[in-house]
Amino acid sequence: MRRTVPVLAYVRSLPEESAAVLSAQAAAIRRAVVARQLPVPYELVWTIRDEAAEHPVRLPEALRRLEMGAAQALFVTRWDRLGPTNFITAGLRRHSIEFGWALEILDDMLDDQADNVGSSGLRSARTIEGLAEARSIGIRLGRPRRCKDDVLRTVVEKSLLGVRQVDIAELLNENGVPTPGGGERWYPSHVSRLLRTQDARQYRRLLLDCLDDQAVHLSRLTGEA
Picture (cartoon, rainbow, N blue to C red):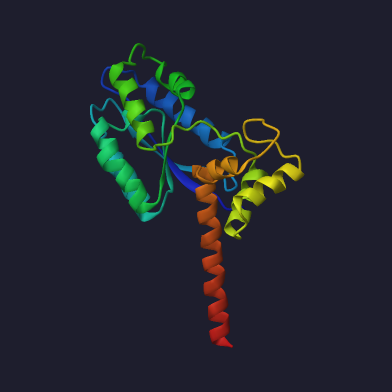
C-alpha cells in the first residue's frame, strides 16, 4: 500500500459572504492537494468548515487533530481565513513547530478563484500586510515547487548519506539534470536552497522515521535471537 500524508483543510466564510465561498475554498484546496507532486503524496482526510463566522470558531478542532498526529498539514486558501495577524504569529507558527505539522497557504491565483465566488473587493491593506508578515515569519504560501520528484529524492538521500553539497551538485551536472529554475548548471547554493524547502525537510523526516523503525525492528530481532 502506498504511503500518504494525511492533511486537513480549514475553510471559513465571513458573515457578509455567501455560502458558495466555503464550497469554492474547499474545491480549491482539493485541487491543490491533488496537484502537489511530493515524494509522499498528500491525502485530504478532513475539511473543517466555519460558515458565516466572524472568528475561527472551529479552528481549535483542527489543531487538536494536528496535535494528535491524525493530520500532518493544514491547508487554507488565505492567511486571514485563519484569524487576526497576531493569531498566526503567536499561535499557529509556534504550534506547527512544536507539533511538527505544515501550514500550507495557497497562492494568490487559487485564492482568487476561491474567494471571488459570491464575494468581491475583500482584499485590503490588511490582507497585503498580513501576507507580508506571513512571509516574514517563514509561513509557506503554497507555490508549487518546480523540482522534479526524483531530483528531490536524490538530493535529500545523498545529503542524508553525508555527501557534500558540492559533490551532489557535480553529480547532477554530470547527469545533465536542469536546476529547478531551468538552468543548465547546479551549484552548491542550489542544493542548499532545495534542502531547506518544506518538501525536502518532510521527505528527510520520512526517511529518518523509516530508519528508526528498521532499527527498532532489528533490535527486537536481535533480542529474540
